[in-house]
Every structure is written in C-alpha cells, then in structure tokens.
Length: 108
Image (cartoon, rainbow, N blue to C red; front, side, top):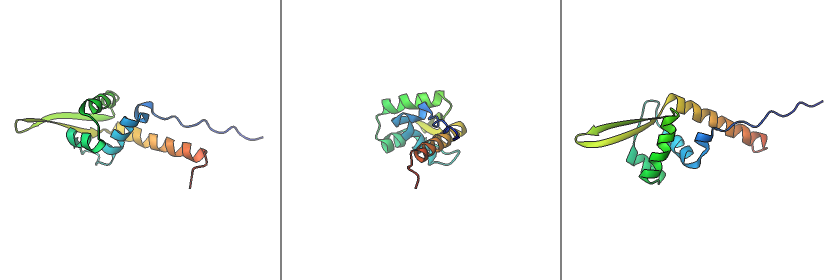
C-alpha cells in the first residue's frame, strides 16, 4: 500500500501576483532594516508610479512592507522596506515554489 502524495504547497496569492512578486523579491535583497527610495524601486522594476503604489498598498495592508514618508530638506521622500513578516512570507513562498518544482521532477 502506497501513501497518498502530500498535497501541493500553498502559494501566497498576495505574493504570487507577478508585480508584487517582483516588488518583494527586490526588497528582499536589502538588509533587514534597509529601505529603498520609491523612485529607485519604480525605476528598478520598470513600473509606473501609480501601478507600484497600488501594489505597495496591498503589501502594506498585509503587513509585508513598511512605507516611511519623510523629507530630505524640503523635498518629500518615500522609502519602502520589507518587514519581518514580509521576509518570512517571501521565504515561505520560495520554499513552496521549490517544493512544487521538486514534486514535478524539476529538481536538479
């Protein structure tokens, strides 16, 4: 008698959306307490400000990113960083993707 295979891993639907996956992956390259200026993130990802703002709002609402609005002199500046919760969610997401690939025979 063979055991039933385990169910496929759950993929976090919030991160799984392509644009949000790109945002979280980019922010994950930063240190734990580091942030990136909004324009730099926008340029890095090749996204419009409006599109990036929409995705950041969803990630912020989930507690995955922190958004800090401040000023550099008289110029407003917005910084974006990945929270501990966001980093954990990304780690779980990447583990789930790897497990999915491994169960499909894609492991090297």
